[in-house]
Length: 322
Image (cartoon, rainbow, N blue to C red; front, side, top):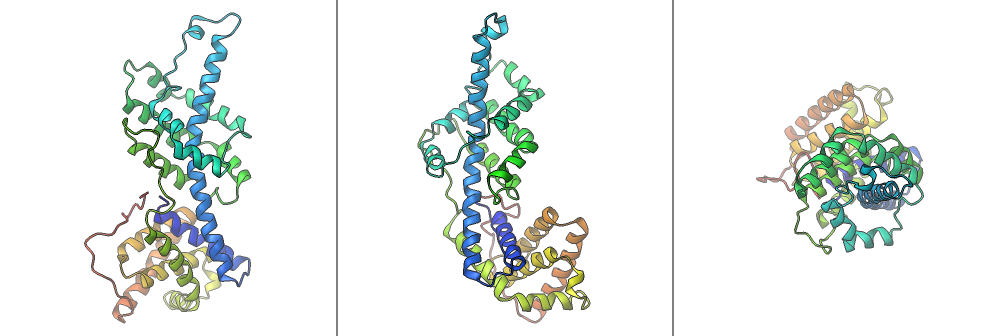
């Protein structure tokens, strides 16, 4: 489930911490890497729970209005379309989701203000109002409004980010990526899925777990080699003049290009440029692209890079697999 792009980002973050902390224990840092991946997996389930909690809160609001001393006609005839959203009902009744949340003790129970804020911002949107007024009540409409909720309300909620930062230091840099994975899960749901429909596993395959460990160790073990290549390709600039994060992105990219013959160079280039766009600057992206291209062309000429010819790679360049 955790996409390879997120795995690459976790490697970047862990290696950054490894160097900044002065930690010499690579095994300890590797354990930290896999723990941070587990925390991203937990965040996925916690974010799925948001829609259930907001729907439950919507039900409380509508029932409270109906029980007012002097209710209006609208209060007496509430619109429960979102409360009874078919996809949310599937999530609420999913036994594996409930088990994951329970075993990990994941809950928003201590953050009622976040649920209220999300409900308020959601119900004020034109999309939500149009959804309630639609004459037909279809599964497609239920799914569409739920994806809209994550894409335009959850993703834009400042309170969510500050809350997650308070809850865990492992979550704040992964939120947008995990929301993307939640949206992809929702887009795949169908009306016939029952309460035993399986939740995605932490890794798409065992190959992904091997990939992340090998990438981490290769990047650190060949640290001096890759930095020397970077220095030579930047006209022997003092590496202190290059942003440390940019160096790490190039270092990990080179580790992947050199250590994984089955991954096309194009895929590795695209992934690390996208990561640079998110964590660095637009100028850095151009700089990283130019330096990597120069190094890789030289390594190919020296026959130090060998790639296995494959028709397609398991992961797409967008790398949003589950």
